[in-house]
Length: 313
Ligand code: TXA
Ligand code: MG
Image (cartoon, rainbow, N blue to C red; front, side):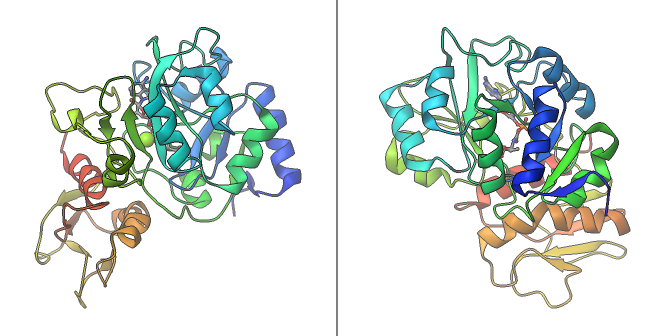
């Protein structure tokens, strides 16, 4: 095991806090994927994140908070935005709102925008770290920009060990796909990134959801880069079976699949397995064929990730 990996005990969380207060980088488990955390208010620490990920600095970061109360100091929440926070925090929902006049999230973390993306994660290690830290921590997924997101401490160590001060281990991420991002500034909610929170659940609290994310000509979220989550292998989607030399990533009953996202077609299970299985296959195969996934519920987020991963450039 990599020497930078430490179980998410209170002692190790305290050590992580020291790193963060000194402007360091700590990989942190969340319910979605592992994040690369830094003090959101410290521009130099934030700059280290962009450098460590090789991430373009026009792509802003999500600020993670320990409570809705803290979020509301950082951003301006409409009644509907507050209702979403009430309904789904802690949980895999990120809300983009106007930045508050005394917000502490640095300009660099917001990529100079007058909005801020906020989320309260549902993971005991992340929450203990955030409440001890007090202020917001920015945390993009802890992988090199454009590559497959990490859902275990070992994934982070493989990709980023030399770039982080410490990796807190909280076990495999239960949801496995990033948070759902909603632009909550308008009269209706806008889906900027499908994610672990099914869009239908948003609709139940705040109806009228629009999907600007599905219009590739007008990206609303700078992170809607076409190629993302990408393995080295080429992906072929909607494949009923493998061709010669291809690995087959199944969904549903498929006894000869190389790996299976969910033999009994459970989308939650498929989401939790997606990035980890892509990594495993990527290590051994140059070409991966992926079974059809239904475009319902979490299928929207899974297909979004697969489509970006399949783009060749
Ligand atoms: O589940 C998650 O959200 C994970 C875990 C670690 O919390 N984090 C994550 O962060 O996925 P990242 O940096 O990989 O994705 C952040 C996304 C990007 O697509 C970015 O463009 C968008 O959030 N974003 C951040 N601030 C924004 C803003 N002010 N307006 C629009 N989009 C924003
Ligand atoms: Mg990411």
